[in-house]
Length: 169
Image (cartoon, rainbow, N blue to C red; front, side, top):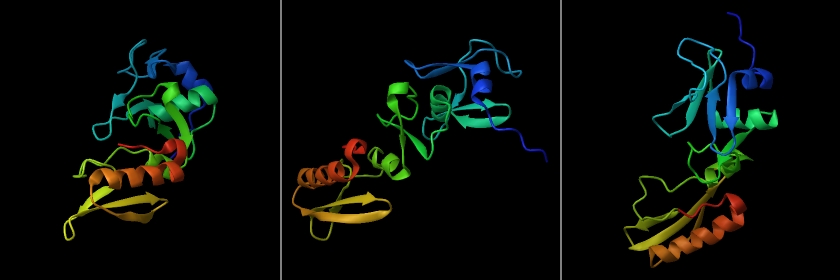
């Protein structure tokens, strides 16, 4: 089976226009049956809200294409959305990040019942546990009497460990 060539910046710019202010891609010319000029490019993923665009029978994440369109390089190891919204591909919202930095900028998980990131209830003692993870290692920050105190401990550690990538909620 013949391998398709990797997308070049010239080919990307030939097919698409990227608006840095809106983060939207629009087709410049017709490249397949379902594509028409000036149509918004891509589709949203049902899982995480990320946008994907198919070019020359290959699927690309829109945020990676935006980075490549502007800089001429792929966003390795990953591209982080500053506001945590994976569908917001405005240029000011994108930044290069290591995987651990990208993970630090994640929102509070849906299954979290405390209402605070890094905080859980220890049912046995009735106190609130504060924990933080970095590069796969979990660090125990303490057992506190209120979820707000545990969250304050998490925030302090997050700012120290993650800097600009720290996310409170």
